[in-house]
Structure formats: structure tokens, C-alpha cells
Length: 242
Length: 202
Image 1 (cartoon, rainbow over the protein chains, first blue to last red):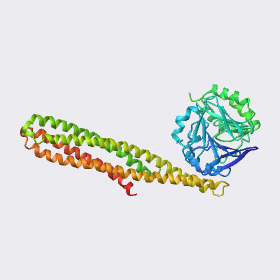
Image 2 (cartoon, one colour):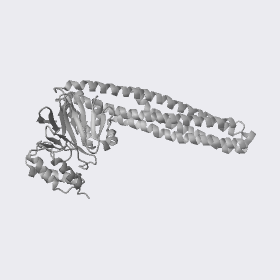
Image 3 (cartoon, rainbow over the protein chains, first blue to last red):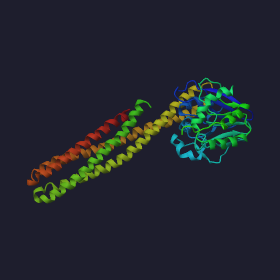
Image 4 (cartoon, rainbow over the protein chains, first blue to last red):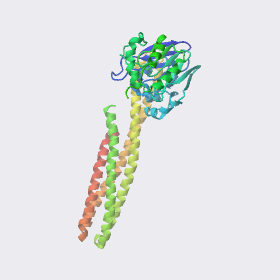
């Protein structure tokens, strides 16, 4: 499991992914961790196949007892099917996830972890003195969907928005936006169902000060590529399967 | 899922299936008892010896139905325990892998407590499963006992039926159906016992 520190300040952001040992037929995913003094948040911690390498990787940054918060942007198995395993490993943790998915996500096993339902209008996660904002991203692609914005680090963890389907050894940041478009066009057109939802999200996100846009698959965008991505996405017709 | 876990799921699921067949047959016995009672009543003195047997048959059927109802509830609990054991064993295996992968990590040692807890929970489940299997086997033995009793009653019924003159054929048919039902119950329950017995000794 590759680990890349993407922010270092009063707290840290670490990106995990590009797991060379994952089964070949499951999609590669990026997991993100925010580490504060005494707490640790795992965002979209991944599928059950990824649990062991992910746990081992996190232990380079925090002890088990300080993994206090999980976040699931939506209900997909590549996002959170490991929940039942985290549930047995963590003794004092909360899962922040869309309210509408609670009854569904509990199928993965959620007995000891406290489910903190995120209402449709969003909310926040407090980690020590850090406050992260939960940005609604409904229908992008899931009907109950949130992203995580860190106003201090200026990072937006954007779930499936910005995702690309790429080989396991690809770089973690976009280095040539124009050539990257082909890797993400079909994903956005096919997985994202609503142009209306897309426009609402872009309008909301353009107001945020973002240095890094961090999707759950593929490469992250930084600097001017963030605006390039928003402009490109703005002009893209989605929901092409009907 | 490994082969043992698969066969454990199959064994527990097959009990419910076998027992639902037993339940159908037990209800048939109950009907046969009611039928026999009516025939014996019509036969009067000619079937005097048969009349108390019909009460036995009916009681036996009712007890079998009650027992099977209890066992079904228990089998459902055993199924849930199997699911739990599967989850806990899976967690323990993943925790073991995570612990190995985390060797050399700054906080790798903190995985020891979850690993030990997972092992303890898994072993608790395994012990509980064995205890529950032993209990279920004893309940199944009680059903077998009923099936054997039903066969004895069927044999007595044949003897009594032979004294019943023109009612002989009707009462012999009752005796045959009780005997056949007892056979079916015996065979089905025996299959349950065989499926479960390997988990008692493992």
C-alpha cells in the first residue's frame, strides 16, 4: 500500500492507495486519513479485501485506539464494505455517513461503532481542534453522498467526483490535465446520473478555497488543475445511459 | 469461505429443511389418528382395543410437532451463531494478516489487543457452537425416540386391526400410514444427526 503525505501542518493528510497486492479484479481505490494530535479519521476506508493492508498502513501513523472516526461518502462496497472488520477492531469509534444509508450500511456489521447520521444538508466532523465540513454531493453518484472539506489544509476529499480508472502504478497527482481527460470522461458520464446535481455541486464547490481535490479513484488534482477539472466537469453531459 | 465453514452452513440449513418435512409428516400422523378414532368409533366393540391406541398416536404426533417447533427455533439460533462465527473467524484472520503486515510500523504493537480480543471472540463462538450442537442432538434424539414409539404403536395397531372384522382394511391402512410416517421421521432426523455429529466431536 502506497502512502503519500499530502498535507503537513497542525495536522496531517495522508493518501493511501495503489495497493500492488490487491486482487486484480477489484477496483483500485484511494483512502484518505486525517491525523490530529489524539485522533485519526479514515475517509472511505475501502472494501473488506483492503482492510488488512489499510490497517497495517494506518499503524505507521496512529495506534489502533486513536482511530476514532470513519467517514463513508456513500454506501458502495469499495467505499465501506470493510465496516464489519473495523467494527471488531475499534473500541471507541464513530462512523459518519449519510443518514439515508444507515439501515443499508449496517448490513456490513456495525455493532460497536457508533453510526453518526449526516443529514441531507451536511454537517461537520470535529477532530481535536480541527473542524472538517461535510459538503452535500447528492447524486454524485449516490443519492446520499457527501464530500469532506478541510478549510485549513484546503483539501476537498471528493469521493467519486474526479475519479479515473487507471493502472495500479499510475502517479498520485495529475501531471497533464488534457491527457487525463480520457481516463475520467466515461466514468463521470456513466456513473453520474444528474446534470442538475452536477451544476449544484460545482456552484457550491467553486466557493471553496481548494488546493487539492482528492477523489476516491485515480489521481488527485492540485493547484490550477482543480479549476480546470471544475470547468471540464461543468461542460460535461452526464447520465448518458438513458 | 473455507470448506469447513461452507459445510457448517449447509449442515445448519439442511436441519431446517429436514425438519420442515418432519413437521408435515407429524401433521399427517395427527390426521391419521383423527381418522382412526372415527373408524374405531364406528367399529364399536370390534375395534375396542384400537381406541386407546388412537389417543396414543395423536399424543405422539402432537409431542413431535411441539418438539420440532422448538428445534426449529433452536436451529435458527444455531444459524445465527454460524454467521457470527464466520464473521469473527474472518475478522481474526484479517487481523492476523494486518498484524504481520504492520511489523516494523511505529504503532504496529497496538494491533495486539484487537487481535487477542478477536481470537477470544472467535473461540467463544466455536465453543458455543459445540455446546448448541450437543443440545440440538439431544433434542433430535427425543424426536427419534418418538419415531421409534410410533413404529411400536403401528405394530400394535396392525394386531388390533386384525380383530376388527369388516374394519380391518381401514384400520390396517391407518397402521400402515403411521408406520410409514415414523420411518420418514426417523430417516430425516437421522440425516440431521449425521450432518451435525461431526461438529460435536471436532
